[in-house]
Length: 341
Image (tube, rainbow, N blue to C red; front, side, top):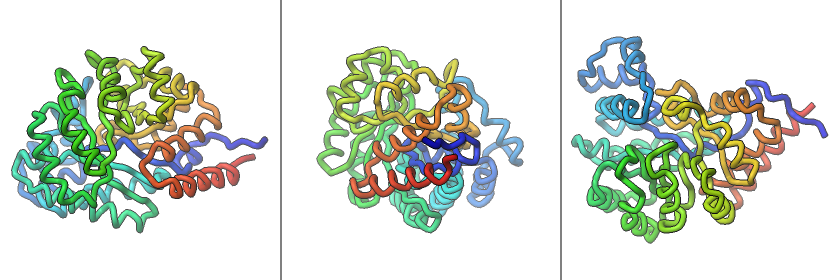
């Protein structure tokens, strides 16, 4: 049977879904400088090169130390709209047909920004992304190094805007902040009709116990990162049985650990887990989603069938309707057939 050649052009154009993308992590140096000037925010740098030089880190903690202060340039609803639209434009060029994007309201409300401005700015951009050929939905993430009470207050203030949200997530520093800390808030979010996902970052203290909590105790619909699960075959089997998706991010893995976890991703793929590739915080890691496909193909020697399976997994693990999933999966098949030789 004819197969496609895994060229860079093929990997970029392949229809795909992105399920692990932090909108605040798409703040490119050029836009950061523009917003700093617009809002009169002193960021300590005055050129794009100076900002780019600060995007350096070798661990999750050092990354977060750069990541959160950068958000100070986001002040008004238009800022959030502009940030998201810049990402959606890049996503379209990466073959993204659907995205379910994270955002961190507490990082903004904690410095006086109204949650209305955050949600409505992002939501307006998600709606306008359709003009780029990208459908988009929003996932409100709680910062796990804030209190559970803060998460509950955030959920309460966000629920009047529930029509703009598809789910809730959990991110930021995992140390001493296990999933169980937020079990009550996530249960309330599920009662409100929202889907659930949680970060289980790679190589954390207590990684396997945290993964167990999200699967067995909280019952999430997806796990973000989560490749340490390969250390426990019983949990892998449970995740596969439930069809839980794993939103892996090879390039960002290589920044905060010794490698991109290619072996773990390939192992999960071979076992039938719904693992897929994403870009995480692409402005900081220098790689949007198609670049992650390129990087993993080069590192792991993936076959065309492997790549197509990753793309299909991204749609199958999404929170689209069954009919929408079938439409996108057919689009993948048509694309591959047209590119096969």
